[in-house]
Amino acid sequence: MPELVPEQREAVEDRGRDLFLDAGAGSGKTAVLVERFCEAVLAQEGAEADVGIDQVLAFTFTEKAAGELKRRVREALRERGRPDLAREAEGAFISTIHAFCQRLLSSHPLAAGLDPRFSVLDAGQAERLALEAFDSAFERWAQGPGDERFEVTAAFSMRGLRETIRTAHDELRSRGCPVELPELGAPDLEGALAELRA
Image 1: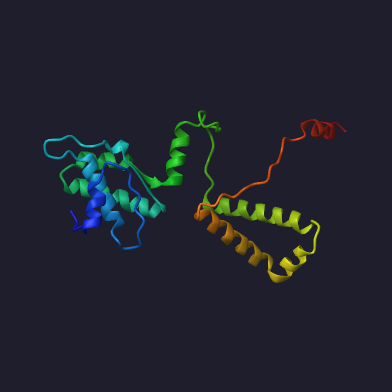
Image 2: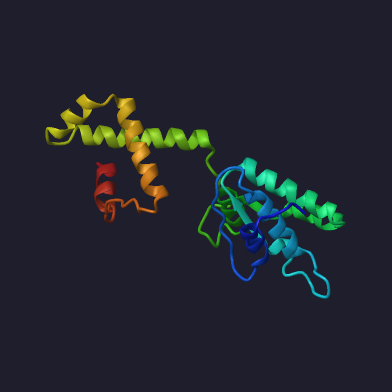
């Protein structure tokens, strides 16, 4: 077991509530999570384990960090003489929030109203769709009324404008600011059918 400072030890031992760790690189977050995980699933003297491995949910921000956390949990369980739990930890819910949601939705697609064959966009696909959406929205905006569009397009290159808007959007989302979409209203199906029949 690694040497933990008092605040880290408190985070490991206070298992009566959920835990969110937010700290800089090299601060010992992974060590705390590994210890907390192991202490929760290992039986203590005279007591049963708090939870089973399938009841622990640990999120990280990157796939790399999730893989490292899972590797270290398995290693710690082996070091504590529990190779059975180390093997079981291979299937533990240690992942990014995106991977967890995909796993959950894949297990229950119909209950979520999804096509059972749905797939999640990879980063490249998501980037292409975001660029297409920006270009489409920009084109509609640029064709609209008003002189302010000329001032904006004169001040920024297309790439610069795209990056500025994307950065502002990401910053607002990271601060929890909702991105409000305009009301679209019900589609005019009768009008669309009449147009198709014409």
